[in-house]
Image (cartoon, rainbow, N blue to C red; front, side, top):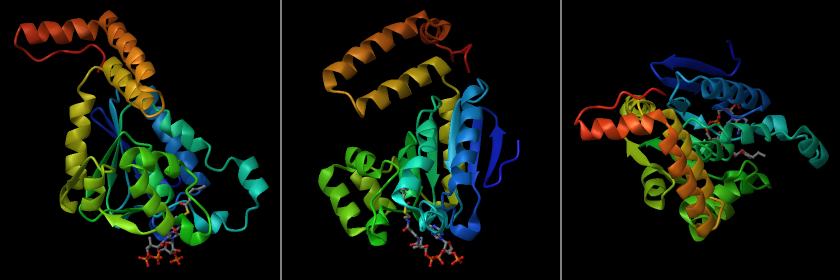
Length: 257
Ligand code: HXC
């Protein structure tokens, strides 16, 4: 399938989505949202794909929502168009998603990274929620997800000042999973994605579901969910295979991968 604003590729069991609007530092307009959601949903529906990587260019993962597209809209138009509602569909993908971030991840770009499960950053990455400089606030989940990632005081400082933080500060703050040299970013992302994609899909879906739940449920409810999802996996052939392989001191040959 051809997309207007992204490049896609399936390599082994890994689905790649590369944002491709270099003229606008990969600003997220409506078409980008449609393309990314469609590509991620297609990979998600494909059992031959066990992990997805979303990446941008060396200079920018994404410099935010497209300011030029939004500028003249009224509040009513923004609400009616549900301009960014589609991103919720991206966040709901069951397949693990790695954001491989080089350069700017600002505003909606930072928020897109935070919709992914793992944020792998090049040492050149810069994160921020600069919306306050435009007279608005984060609108794609930033106010909620950033707090959960880095805590209230760090999130409040970033959102109220609009300043950027570099990759090492972002890693220390807990926004970034791991920092790698920029030249190694895609190779490291591929290695990580292949490692994940080699696992049993039902267990990956289950792990992602309970991780997601931890973001929004009280502890006791999350623990109850974990107990049931954990037990449910014992009805999969892959659990039997995984544990037999351990006992027999060999690698598992999962049916669902
Ligand atoms: C539209 C953008 C853009 C954006 C960059 N461009 N960011 N276009 N929307 N978010 C365009 C520029 O206009 C320019 O186009 C080209 O990309 C290159 O950018 P430059 O500014 O010339 O590059 P540079 O000087 O290197 O500065 C890089 C930058 C800066 C620091 C990242 O571009 C910047 O501050 N961008 C905006 C960042 C931002 O405010 N993001 C939050 C957006 S609001 P031309 O045609 O002039 O060459 C948001 C809300 C999300 O994300 C929630 C939605 C509801």
